[in-house]
Length: 255
Ligand SMILES: [Zn+2]
Image (cartoon, rainbow, N blue to C red; front, side):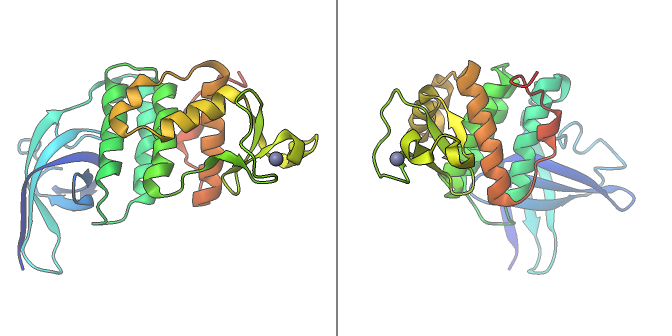
């Protein structure tokens, strides 16, 4: 059964040379999810897909597939936004690369997730217009866990079951994605990451909002650093894989 799709919103996640003159391009598409397609002539002759298959580019693509076993063929690509800042500004590039790695790591071919597409699009768009890169990453991470169904629980202490008071620090356990209050943790915090009350509050507020409202949050200072730190550690434990691009991101908390 032939498959044909037209004008589908898609983000370029990867692009590899294939043979003498072609490219295999990995997209994350609205409705369709991750999709790899062969772009004929894209490697040798730049004419057909000129400047369109760069990393992070936002396109509308048309593709087809002639039979079950064959490759998807990229027929057309129309530029929606090249997100040029993501390839010209170092800090934006670094954060976009982290997001790209997470998208490639967690998505499989044709398992659609519209929320994930919307989230990635929001992140790349806000990076492109120059919003604080670390802020975008922190918000992306909290929502990313949500969308994948791995929302950490910051509301209840796992030891005593109470809601920690709004003005007390708690410990975040990166293995379980849960918190423990100070009383239950003991003096050394059982190895959890200490979170200031403002961090817990911010994370829970972000969790409750849809992607379309993420831009209203402006985490900064210690709250921002703690959001990034616990997201990175939690993801490392969750996926059992380090995200290489994190290393390039300057860690302001440790100087
Ligand atoms: Zn407790």
